[in-house]
Amino acid sequence: MSSAGCLLAALAATFKLVWLLPVLPLLAAAAIALHSLVNRRTADAQEPLVAGLASGAALGVLLLLLTFDLAALGNAPPGYLVVGEWMALETVPVRLSFILDKLSLPVATLVAFIAWLVLRFSCTYLHREPGFRRYFFAMSLFFAGMLLIVLAGNVVLTFVGWELCGLSSWMLIGYAWHRPQATANALFAFLTNRVGDAGFLLGIGLAVWLVGTTEWPGLAGDGSLPTVTVRLLAFGFVVAALAKSAQLPFSPWIARALEGPTPSSAVFYGSLMVHAGVYLLLRLEPLLVQVPDVMALIMLVGLATALYGYLCALVQSDVKSALIFSTLTQVGLMFLACGLGFFGLAAWHLALHAAWRAYQFLLAPSYMHLVAGAARPVPRWLAARPWLYTAAVQGFWIEPLARSLLARPTVALGRDMRSLDERVIDRLVGVPREDQADDVREVSADELIRGHGVAGRVLFQVADRLLRLEARLLLSGSGALQQHLRHAGKYMEALELMLEQPRYLMLMVMATFVVIL
Image 1 (cartoon, rainbow, N blue to C red):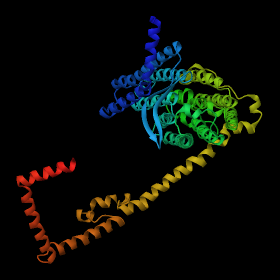
Image 2 (image 1 turned 60 degrees about the vertical axis):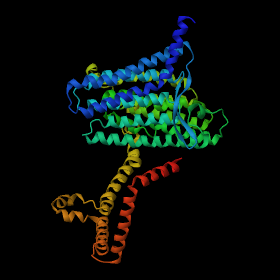
Image 3 (image 1 turned 180 degrees about the vertical axis):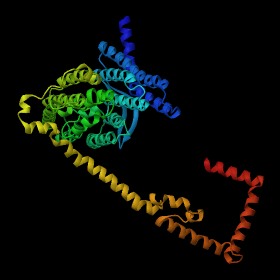
Image 4 (image 1 turned 180 degrees about the horizontal axis):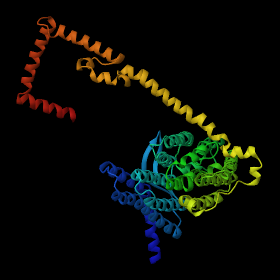
């Protein structure tokens, strides 16, 4: 074998290390969390270590993926690769599997490059920020989640990455947790994305129940699955994709997500996470082509979202808001391409737009210094139609509708549960109310022993009855029960003395061995 062939074979052997890709950023996140617990001081000298852990893990992932790319250029990528068994859902095994093909490898390399670039940019951008370590912890979780979404070989492992991205997104939107608006925006985005998670879970359940596998190659099928099964399965994943990529009617949450630091906006909503829904559709291509009606739905939603983002972007005066609505327009066009069956075009559009939008978001803080003149006015055709201009400024009133249908009922349910807990549950278990806390501290120990609430009073009465029974039956100086207990005590004492003899002890040991054998 030539030296080039040996080199390609050695590079191909590295494919078995694919499990390291999501593990490296997870280890970085664990190290940052441990460092934060051990050393709570926020000093400038600690920033290089934290940033180095996160960016070093990203660089390691990038270098390993470049090695995979070189190996794939010489030989065909391995495609579906199983590392081991994870668990089983009923009788359906869930494997630690990964997909390394012509779709996942380029996208994963792009994810690693942008993540490493943004983490390096963040080292200086967030210098001396109080939440410096918290930011890099959440970014490492997000990086691991994106790698799982892109590389996972089954829907369960993909869902783990899906949730890691959602969790880190919630953490970074609420980065300035002391500001009520930041926490409210984080809650709104979190609740909206949970609707998409419900669709993803529906897809997983149908895959286990109707198809009998959770692996992506098995879900694609050979065209033998019933049309109803394919339609239901595709619909669950499509809902998840629509919510994650902020397509209508889930679009309002993404504008609120800009509350986080600018680098996180670049990597989350400008270049990577907002494209996760598009990537999910690309992975579902063999399944979607079997249900033209679902593809028609994707096409219509993508077209509507593109028009919505275009009109809203024209009336924005803030640079980040204009960029995020422009992103909605581009992602809507990707959904439109998928709905029309141009999946290859959507993949190229995803890669080019992710790289360009990441650059624009990272440059956004400098735009106000680079642009000296006033903002460009709205086009004449839009200004000549006040009703359309007003609708674009108001975001076509989709956000108030989403807030009324989703956020407010959820917050109201939380308040009702808290009220139930304070007024009913706490009284039943005897926990004092807040207005009684000071009074409880001043009560004597004997009073506290009696407990509070219905449960406390019942338990105290039961204990009092048992105490009286014990005093009457056992502690009285006479009575037949006491005499029987004394006789039983003598017999037990004699038995104990007998068992202490060596011969009886050896007999018990031999009997134990007989039972075991």
